[in-house]
Length: 177
Length: 177
Length: 177
Image (cartoon, rainbow over all chains, first blue to last red; front, side):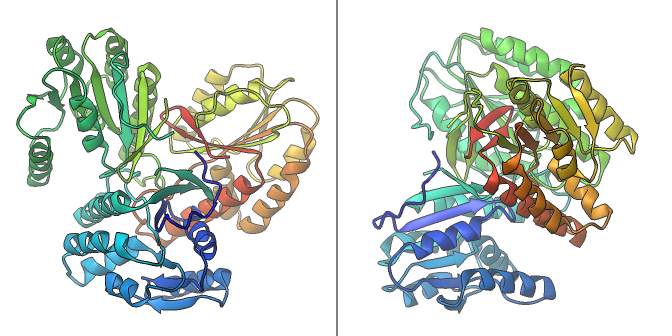
């Protein structure tokens, strides 16, 4: 049940989900490094406030400087096309991407479906980090409720096309697929 | 660890838990259909507002028209007695039933215990969908805290008598029992 | 994947995580009893209000009177040193201890790291109960966000040094490590 973290080169699309500060990103970084080539970090976060800036800086410090970095708040599928053919791409994270799509009033369900359609066709591996946000009490406000619905639907759509899915709790992965 | 979805006819009480939009209902529907006979959909939801109406319509559209449908906001054990002997019954969901019991000021702990006592005695399979609501930050208001306590206790009581328990994340089941 | 609850005497540090009312404490109590010697209950809770008092009383009624009890809101590592050499110690729970550290304006990250350093050196087993609090929607207020970040980091640090880690859902343990 517990993935030993062994690399399987023919497993190209890997979804890593979990709660906040569960060790998802660290796990995804380790797995991305295990593939040949220089890894590409595809950040969906934008440094819009001090809290987010600090979080980005923490992640970057841990990763080290040997990553190619891309900031991609919205056009994820295109960025994955543009960086295909080299090392593994790590998308961190899908939940923030979804949030960016909603803020930009883009059709999130169409974009998620397009991404899901594109993922199995890439030559280089893609690791996608996402969040579980639906395991707490029902939120009071309707916006939070529709966001958690969207996030749950997105995770199901991407998990469906992924070769591997891991659920990380306390830094430890459980293999879902 | 991952259940392959194979039907085991002697496994009659199946609890399927997970977060919001985790794919619990879809999973439960697929497993209910795998049993012989026309499946019975026992809806604990009442269409009290537009958001709930839409959710009910989405579920119904996915299930198709071959289900027998029952709306059972409160008297779940009786409804399961009344529909016993035919196809599998799918209760969707226990968390809403609990919420209905609390609103109606019924003694939820007694009703849950009665349901748990009845479940092992049915001839036809029973699949029960429930929610994990206790994995977020402690809610500010006391009502939400006591609801999540009640939901957690209910899930333990039902899981204890279930033949099988699955925890669904991103549409993928983990076998707990 | 499911731990059969068998005792392994050389597995001395056991972390048991899960949501609210998931059956974590009950599971930890059963495992603590399986070790030889009179078990020690290390309560991090203080009975500061009626709700907490009731919760403490419920836990105590279930455990029975054969436990040695210690109330340790802050100085956990010292309490584990002081009680070493006898039966298993059950710390219930780390999340509350973290909350106490934050209220007392202690350096939580240093204290967690010190605890993690001390854990592998004890002669008697230590079972630690903790909470997953990061699987809901992002909390509105910054304090709740930083608490859930701290809890997630703490769980990773302790899980890293633990011999065994279990994730309990609906009273049923999944073995993470």
